[in-house]
Image (cartoon, rainbow, N blue to C red; front, side, top):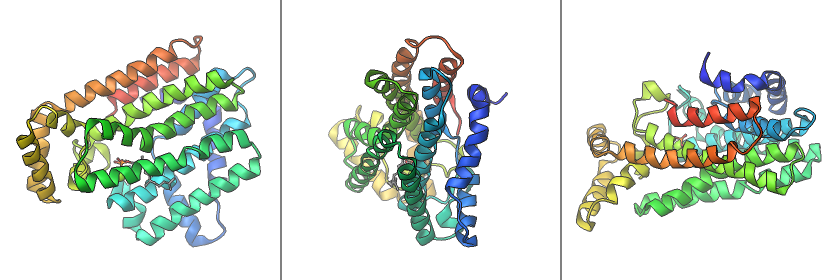
Length: 326
Ligand code: FPP
Ligand code: MG
């Protein structure tokens, strides 16, 4: 069985119902808008965030997973998708999940407005549910997500990325929403503040690991990942595999490498040369090591929960995040 399916197995019923909720949440009676929403829904990713919501809801549930968990799962996945549709415009990415991005299939205008539409629908969903503890907990993460992107964009243009600033950026742009997913799942099942906090910490650590892995996979071939290869380097984005190497260099050498990244633009030969330098100098292994530390931190919290199918899935998810190839 596919590893993600194995992880989702204890939630088979929930995911069946969840799909129908998702279709309804993005319903439009306008054919054009409905077509774009169908495209986004059918080409979305692995659904890690709703999975985290349901698993953390499951771990804390006394009487089964309730409706509040569905609301949280939908909201985090909608926010995530809205952010990706915008992100692909910001990053100028042509493919995601092996398919053309919304802005390359339509255009940047459609992409930005579609992201806005999904965002607006998630607010409506939240407000109409009147589950204000969950809604305010989730929406509090949005500004941090956007802040992460803004800080990243400033650091990329000035090429001043250090390990510390890199970790701050990925904490905000990725870890927060995964932390919110876990915390909201626990909250949906009525966990007390300490339970919500612990679940959030699992998601934060998994989120850090997830983004580091994403940045490692950026160096992998496009056929493997479904995204274009070395997109980060082509955008001048300096991520952990390269940062780990820069840290070992003296000031002159560091300036020379950063200048090379700047000058490479999206010239395929120059990009391939930098990527092969990062690989041969052990940048991937160094980043992988940091990623493993975050996964171990998540595992050390997960083992404190009583044994259950949900706990087992969270453990498997840690392994999956570390080993995934796309
Ligand atoms: C992927 O990072 C992008 C994010 C995790 C967040 C993007 C957030 C925004 C664009 C702000 C807008 C937010 C909302 C809620 C509308 P990446 O580019 O490193 O990864 P990738 O390789 O998957 O593109
Ligand atoms: Mg991107």
